[in-house]
Image 1 (cartoon, rainbow, N blue to C red):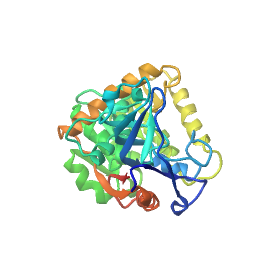
Image 2 (cartoon, one colour):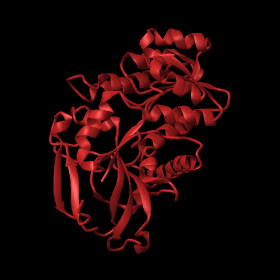
Image 3 (cartoon, rainbow, N blue to C red):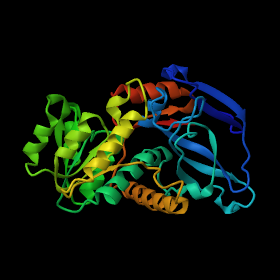
Image 4 (cartoon, rainbow, N blue to C red):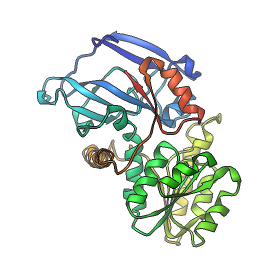
Length: 343
């Protein structure tokens, strides 16, 4: 791939993965307060799966370049930007735009990646790691000896949630299909087979008094069941609506239903708490605080990966121009870990 050429993957509309387009253009130059980043790894997350269906609740109008997060090296700096940043490996949340060979960023939105981490390995822990860390420590506020339920504990966020919760001294119950149970047991997780039926009953047998926190990415009926599984003083953290991925109709409605439910539950006098996690919350009103929190949390996660305390499985590495194959693989449900694109 020509390093002097910008290569981007464009999502032109609601299409099958094969409908993604490759766009080439001249390499952009950083303007004032910008850095040019040569992308070394960018991930395929659930957000892109929703976006190609037009189902991500605040996605931009088509066409656009997907790509929620990335790891890369700063190759040039614009006027007024510290030239010593050149050569630094960074990670960044982008929401869109990451599926490219190069991106322009504000250096304040970048986080240094520790030496010794492979870019693809680091990439698996960017959006998934921040999500897991913030839900666990900033919202559920997990303490040693508590018991938590992680839905989809074999998934990208779920595996990190399970590991971080175990590192915090919590007992973890995790839902997954039976073929993932041995891997979950190896992480110290008690597995529950969601395909065996009546997940709430299975969880209650393991935690008769309820659980101290539930992390629910499923939405729909699952959110109600999760709330009812909480022990007194427990916390529900909802962070998606995966069960509505293939639905039609309003893309906002599934999220609005969860928001309405969490608002109502928080008015009840039972000491339990409910949150809908949005990784971008507060960014528009408190940008400096948002950036400081992001930097602190992602640094903690990447340091834990570097020390080997947690692992974020890498399902596959594929060339950026094979984004269609990567997206189809991620959507197949046949792989464990994150699919990563390498420009």
